[in-house]
Every structure is written in structure tokens, then in C-alpha cells.
Figure (spheres, rainbow, N blue to C red):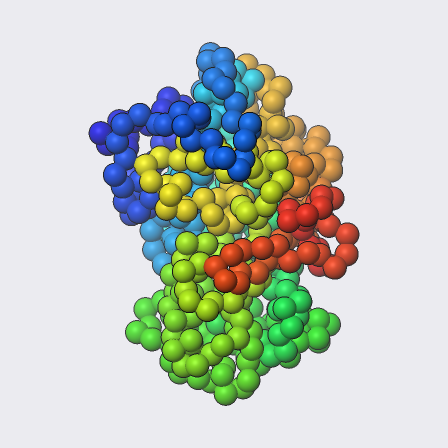
Length: 434
């Protein structure tokens, strides 16, 4: 049976351009979804709810623009499947949102300007799409001129670009921007005793070239030497030359501002040249299945979605919903173990809580008004800091992230040196940077 044939009512509509991601994470789907009882994990007991009332009001849609194809797509592999799993769980066990069944409409932005604008135009034209999530940092600015005039609320996703985040009033920012999480990687490098820091950045995007300025300015205040920036292209046959150059400068921390697939190739090439220090990765580049099996890999950095390994109950619920409702082999393949998946889950959960009393005929303006009423919300630690969105001004900057490290194939949280930004303790505690 095909994926589209077995899609649960109100769960998701995939764009025609999503075949590449579907082939990766949904291959081999057959039969009915497994039950909660069959899927509940032994270490996360009692979180999955039983069947709830059937949603009987009008359908509402949440649009997602994400890179499903192209070089950056490996960073966003978990977005569409995690959103689908969330919607299936909400519709089957939570009665939808105040009786409204929820449909996720995911479209491929390809990280390309014209395609991104076309996706935004299509979403705006459908009045049932009440809000958007943009999980593609290169698409944020391109889509802004389309979504802004339509007053389309952007309620989560990647939050890299400072020209829209904290500027456009329809963007409700939930994650840290580049100016906060990139220095966060350097701060984490210091926490793991690194002294000499270099950055490998993507050659394809002008935004990547701004990384050098960020690290140059941050290095003196953090106390780590910045040895240089290496622009590398995904199409390059190998990365031997930049690896050797960084090694010659005695670099002991190489951060990778690259798509996950390219980052793994850099790791392999640098290790082959004798590098034995720590690598860095931030935000959506941290895709666990791609890194965990690399022998001897030490990785550290900052992520903009909550840590999927945390013991806290809200994270247990996330894992159980992923185990129960991810289509096909998605759970076993680990497509949910990355910050893009946890980020989209937190974004959707905030929407569900914010719109829990939505009217029988909800509108985008109603969504905007509801978000303006939020005050200090953290979702029990699933957001990196309390968020409030006062009416009449753009969203305040989010300055907190989760610091992590990967050693011996295991992820763990690097504890903040000060008070946790999200007001929780343990391995869900976030770190902040002014």
C-alpha cells in the first residue's frame, strides 16, 4: 500500500516535490499503523494517551515550508515525518485542537528563492492554512515578502536570519538566531577544553560567509583562539587541503557550518589526515544517525531544538509519539533524533496550547491575537527560554540554546554555567548567551 493511501485522516499532505525525502524516510510502509500499546517503550511508560473523541469541526491546516531536496535537505529530514506523527496523535487521541482536525501541508522549498516564494504564495491562497512553520534557514528571508502582507503567522522552525527574526511582526521567534547559537558553539568548545577553533562553512550560501565575523568577534570574549574560516562546497570531491591547513594551525576544534551529509564527509577526510580533536555542529546540522557511528568521533556544539535524549516527561512523550505514529521505518531509522524534528514538535505543541480555545471558524488574525497573549511560556522546558510576544512589536530575540556533546556514540547535555534559560534542571536545561 502506498504512503498516500495509508495516510490517516487529517494527518498530512505532502507536496509533489517531496519524493526524495519520502523515499528516504517512508520507504517500505505497509499495513496499518501500530498501536500505542505495541509501541510504548519500556523506559518511557505511561505517556501515550488512549483514543480520544473524533474531531467534528472544520479542518484547519498548518503549512510547513522545508528543504526536502537539494544539498541542505539532510538537515531537515525529520521535519515532515515528525509533524505528521504529531498531527496523527493529536487527531486520534486529543480530539484535534478544540474539535478541529489538523492537517499538516508540507512543501519542498528546495532552499531556492523562486520555489520558496511559490510555496509561500500557495499557502497564503488557502484560507484554511492558519499558520506557517519555515524549516529552512535559507528560505526565511525569501518567503517573508509573501507572508508579511498576508499577515500569515510564522510560528516556528529555523530562526537564523536576523533580517526577519525580531523584525517582521508576523514571525513569532522560538529559537536562537545565528548571533547567539554560533557563539554558543564556541562557548561549548571552551567547556570541552578546546583552545584553537576553526570553522568549515558552506560555500553555496552568502549567509554562511557571515560566520567568520561572528566568530572573530566572539573569540576574544569567550577566550578561544579563532584560527580561520574554510569555505567548502558540497560538490567538492574531497576536503584534504582545508583539513591539512587547519591541522597545521594546531586546531583542536573544527566547527562544521554545513549540511549534515557534507559535514560527515569533512569529518572523515580530516580524521584520515590525522585530526584527533573535537568537531562542532550547530542547530539542524546535528542529525544523530549520521554522526553516532563514526569511530572515535568527538562532537560538541549548540542545538535550537530540545535534546531528544532528555529524561524529562515532555521529551518522553515526544519519543513515545514518534515511536507510535512515525510512518514506515522512520522511528527505527532515527529521523526524529535531530533538532529540526524536536523544533517542529515544540512549535506545533505551542500552537496546540495557544489555540486550545479557538473558535469554530478560526482565522489567521485569531492566531496572531492568541500568540500576543502568551506570557513566559516554556512548554515545561521544550522551549529554550520563556517566550512572550507583546502586541505592536516584533518578537523578542531568543538568546538560549541547548549545549551538547557526543562521545563514545552517546549524546549528552553540557550543563549551563549559570541558571538554565528554560527554568528546568537536568539534561533538558538550556544555556543562554547575551
